[in-house]
Length: 213
Length: 213
Image (cartoon, rainbow over all chains, first blue to last red; front, side, top):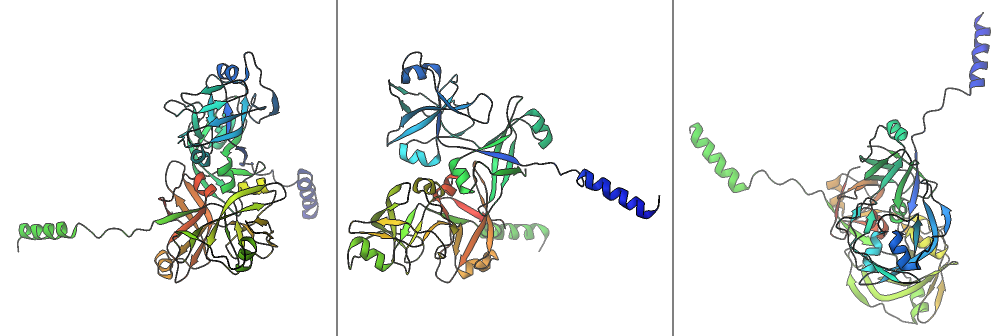
């Protein structure tokens, strides 16, 4: 086979294959959380009446998690926030995740915590249609975190519990440090930030970030 | 002089001087802006009545700038924000600086701009005690910036208009890129962020940041 034929053959092969295989996509979708509430079965009954069932309105990206039709008023010593969304399903312990800005309105100081790490956190009063509950603890500002599968963790070279730094794109960009990896066999890849963190970097629910260590 | 005496002399000198001269402090104080309004003299008259003078309640860190007792309601097609603070003194052109979160409430999309760069920005309706004004333009989200003197600029090795990256401290830290240096002979050193940018990094008005390029 002469040079000309070899060239044509290679050209045809490359065109059929669409060039070299694409570079692996290392971007991570962003999920943005506004203030929200997780309820225990006992607190759900107290706030909405015995035997009440939450009404799902929208599935969230993480398996089994959903937004509910129901909202509550949350009250601190200085003020209240109305229509705070409940997320389902019910959990072992009630938990209220607020924004830094909400602390001023409520007159409460919430610590930075991962979901579920509630020991020593302040309480807050929840008011529902059938009653109110004064939580002994459970008020937090969520730490930035990335949900991922164990395969994703391996692909990114990170471990469950590890802190990484993420890079955000765009004209109001930067990096967020101390982003906790939450890897297990049921999670879907998503970086969770709250609305203030998203707005400060002008991220939307269609934004993607990358891990930069 | 023997080694012993030389050592004693040097020891005494070092103790008197307090060790080597301290490292230069390269930290920059943070100033946090909530949504606010600058008014032209014409719009001030329209909103508060002819000949009205603003009432200063607090000097701001930048020379001649102050917070006023007066507030306005700002209105977009989807909603309104009440009690938005006016900053004095009056300026050539009215300008409304809002937060990213406010865009959703107002139903308006504000571009990222430096103060005063208003060409092509959307307008908004201002409502005061004596009248209302429909601004043709002037609605912005402020770009992150650092005010500094020309001496400070020299010390940091930066120029007026240059974009730098800043590092924030603490357990919710990171970096903000695209922070614009605003250097002139009247400014006081201060990095201006809005409340969402401050909250996303848990910065307060006593926080300090550093330039990292």
